[in-house]
Image 1 (cartoon, one colour):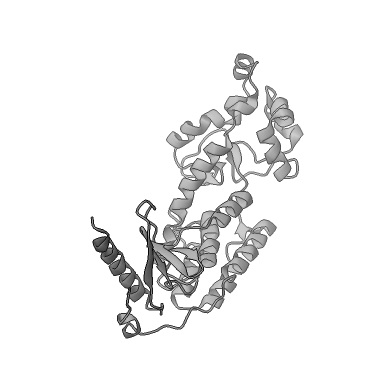
Image 2 (cartoon, rainbow, N blue to C red):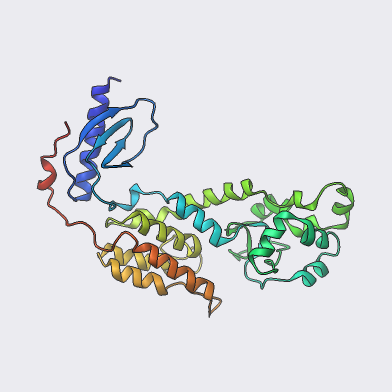
Length: 316
């Protein structure tokens, strides 16, 4: 395809984007063509430059506000959510209390002491939760989404999926037969690796960003990151998939769609802070962090212009 034809296609895409958003952008001109750069949707290169596909533009992006469907969660937020959610390298019961060393060793007389005292992966978990660990899950119970969990808050939804991960079940790792058969191998080997945990985590992140299709008003990257954190923690759907109550994120989205950004921030600060009917300080702290992030790039979008104000856009 000739470069002139490629430029025309990209110019048409940009015009469509600008008209859809109905916000003012200055004139833009092509300043560089890079055939080997992978396509990006409105990638901001800084210093007033941006890139669509292989064509680099100058003077296109003037501010941080755009429609949610053009965002993906930032690397900073990916790392922060990973840290807050606390990766767990075995299947655990998300609804049971955490257990200490004595209870763990009593529960697993074969290999439990070795795991607790010598496993580097297990040590990370112990240090994260004050020398306690999430209670291991022995079986999958039908219909109890969120009970059997692994990795970065990944809820195991079926018996088949539970079986897929049962190699990482403490109940399978700490058996007399397994300990004897693998006497020359550290039991740490059977726990999930960081790479395995992150693979599931990134897949879950993609799923939990689906809320963006419901946002009709422009938002900032910080707002999108805050909403992704909430969605990952409390659900991305309009309603709970089984209990059918409205999910926390939907209340925030409805306020955004009315242009009530400050109200949305205030709501985010106080919503979804309970578990099992009890308010948890960890959730209180997390909502406060998310609310602060939500307003990091401001709560007032750029002034809206009429479509005629961009109709004469010229791409030189």
